[in-house]
Image 1: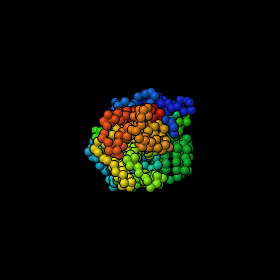
Image 2 (image 1 turned 120 degrees about the vertical axis):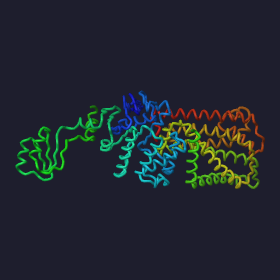
Image 3 (image 1 turned 60 degrees about the vertical axis):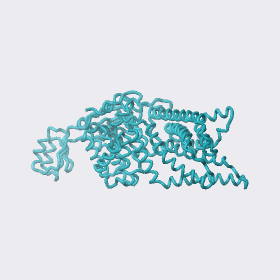
Image 4 (image 1 turned 45 degrees about the vertical axis):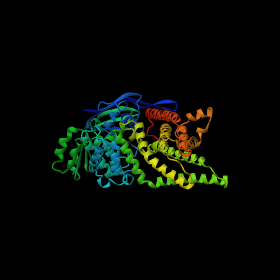
Amino acid sequence: MQVLQAVHLQKFYRAQRKNVAAVQNVSLQISAGEVLAFLGPNGAGKTTTIKIIAGLIVPDAGQVKISGRDPHRDPKALRSIGAVLEGNRNVYWRLTPEENLEYFGVLRGLSQRVARQRSQILLERFDLQDKRRALTQTLSRGMQQKLAIAVALIHDPQLLLLDEPTLGLDVEATENVKRLVREIAAEGRAILLTTHQLDIAEDLSDRVAIINQGEIVVEEPTTDLIRQFSGTAYRIELEQPLDAERFHKLGSLATVVDQLQIHLPDPETLYSVLDILRPLPIVRIEKEQAKLTEIFLKLVREGSV
Amino acid sequence: MVMSLFLAELKRSWIQLVRYSSEVIGGMIGTTIIFYGLFLSARYIAGPAFQLGDRLDSIIVGYVLWTLMLFILGDIAGGLQQEARTGTLEQLFLSPYRAPTVFLMRTIASLLLNLAINLGILLLILLLTGSQLRFPPSLVFPLFTVLLGAYGISFAMGAMALILKQVQQLLGVFQFALLFLFTTPVETWTGTARTIGWLLPMAPGAGLLREVMARGAALNWMAWGLSLINGAVYFCVGIFLFQWATQTVKRQGKLGGY
């Protein structure tokens, strides 16, 4: 089931008497349970797109539907959106986590009773029970971010917009957020995630959309994109150095040996190489895969696919 | 639904008031001291024959209404700036309730608290100056029209805060213009000036409150009807401008920016 359908979004801003395109012809779809990593350099149009989807910026053209409703025309559509926006506190620092959850629950349209029940569930789930009565401003950055995500989920939305959710977090807090994102998607929610930490995008996303200068330059399933940009070569890592005889034999198969690493540009030689190596202990054999970071930089530098 | 929102806003305001009560007490004492300072200066200039009588009472009514107006203005225009700066404003606009509804519920919720605080300021001033105001039940009618106008003006200033973002200095200057509105006895003006007096925001209601509380007059219902129209018009214009400003900043993409 498609939760988000954004079609042909356009947004121009007036700057120095010129119309500058912030977003051009951007279309995005996300299904229930799917994580879309929305990547792009600074100023590429990510935040503008997210805010158009959330109904916070009115597009010049195009249409957004969240579970069939347009957030720009039908306020009920906002019941289906939860958002953690970058550079914002998102919650009240002068209130406790419990008070924040209950307040935002009602603000998102829940009754006081349901907001209280949902707060208790989320406090438990996000491991914030011990801090439920501490002032938010006294919590660690990681806990504040967990609270912001919990608040975004208080009204049980189908679409979660996460704009740089791991920015400024330490390793442990980042891992916590990653685990939560996986769990939230597994519940059947659609997640739109922006991040500059591309390893996180690679780990979490089902699909990747890359935006550059306001235009989507690629949108593919993450594994397909990585496969497309990966070569066919293999790499073998050995536990101990090669003897001279094996070294000589491998040389005749056009492999490159670098201490404990053997690089096989031709995949057809894999089993012949393994025969030569038998019975030496092997640490790992892997197909050389492109990293999302390399793909991202290549696409953004080229400006198009 | 809206009632739940009102109760949530009331709870939020109450928690912040209790948790940061020193800020409120400081505000109350500061406001009272400023008035007392002005009072002492006036008495010093006038000398031993100082007798203001119901004029002092009139000024007190105007001053306390002005402080009430400042609280409401702070709630809406000041609150908007604060939320834009700290980054919670956009979350408020993600509510299925429309923004004017959220802010209206918010200010009505804190009105009860603001009224209590202002009553405290009023009692302190009465105690210090020895003034004796009357509190007939009929004062709620002109007070209502003043509040309508105050909300209208605050929403209009809120609209400006949304669009311009930095309105602190403007708010500072505007506060003195408001002091003029609340303390000038427009009810005593005649001719064309009288008509202008009826058109000024909140001034007709404030005049009626002075009549009722300081001069002990009965409420003039005809005049109250006019002050009600005055308050309702300013309220509607304020809400309209606020709604227009939210649409404009959403078009400009400047809602959260500060």
